[in-house]
Image 1 (tube, helix red, strand yellow):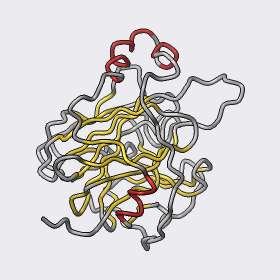
Image 2 (cartoon, rainbow, N blue to C red; image 1 turned 90 degrees about the horizontal axis):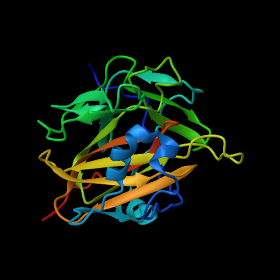
Image 3 (cartoon, helix red, strand yellow; image 1 turned 30 degrees about the horizontal axis):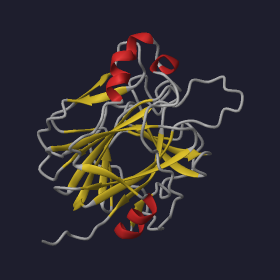
Length: 262
């Protein structure tokens, strides 16, 4: 399938307010989010990251350093469910799809709407789309106040249970010393009637498709700005998965088109 290319690409450079996720245990237990049978998985997400190859960085600084942002403003500003994207989104500096070559998208658990891509041992960084209606959507997002990307899960584009529940993979045109993006998990819940925000899992791959590191992030309501820097090899691609009961949306993916020297 041919890559999806909007009519024109926005080159606007947006500086977002960085919200550092911090460390430590989540403010809620795994039982609060997914129920007791998911306890083993959720405890694993809180494991330490000794020997990390990728470390958290400040989003504002990385944005200024890299100089490029992919903000989805070239797409028509449609209300949800928005525009269904069945192919790879190919733009300046990066390409976006569901998974990399050698992977298969699968549900985390049989009764979960969220999905992941496995294995993490890739054949290459070639970007592949999901099945028709199970790839991505672009729509105006009130939380961001702009267009955003919705990864679509196995429930499909037409169902609310599918939007925001999929996997997003990004391949960079040039190897990156640092990367960043913004994510929205849920809106503020003053009455406290909804489940708390869940977790984000980010996998980082080098230009030869080798796994550099995996990072787990405790999400929160509203927009969270995330950025990371490699301590070893440059980053060729990232994969974003989540275990959030309300689904996620992504925006403002940072990149640099400059070729690394040395």
